[in-house]
Length: 287
Image (cartoon, rainbow, N blue to C red; front, side, top):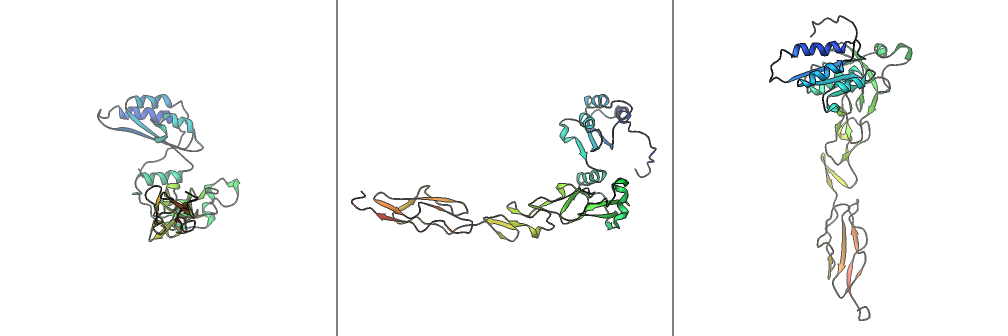
């Protein structure tokens, strides 16, 4: 691919589909056939959708990749069914690169990112915009492998890196590296019962939700002391759980009345609600 020379010209998508028909006509009948269409704009030179439909009728799977300012509807129509799984509309080419790296399990050689003067990224946005092209939470960098200047979101943020396009990782996630990527580049906290502040940069910023105690990198539901029914009494459900938010109903045996709370709740601080409960023998008048 590095030896391919770009000849210029328009976005002749229909011609590409016709060429795909010519090439795939010589393929084996039992082979898996797929077309990956990558474009940055609107097609010209004719409607490519009929040619795409002809390919799909012959068992060809079509994936379409486009940039948001292109003809999104056309790309969606050309994609195979289900279209939401075969059509990818991205905000920028940087986001497309991040998608490709994720699809290839990041096996691509990425090199490293070297911080640059913000002015080095000035060509990444229209000149009339003025100001820095990079977001306030991004840094202008140069890829040592690609040689491209790009704005990269700082740890704790994801997006294209361009102005207004770095978003904090959601609560319950973190991102400990800098670089391109979508929200999937934010890693989940080590335990499903953990949360974190938006824009966290380390798993050490994750903490257990209310009602849980943290032991190492795991959350364990907080427990109250084991509750025993009062003498001459019993639990309504025959047993009583002692984890947080568990409720235990108490009753007294016939001939006894209940003094204290009839329902005890295991609270988030690890203590039972209400006071001690006891069963007192009823008097003749009460009977």
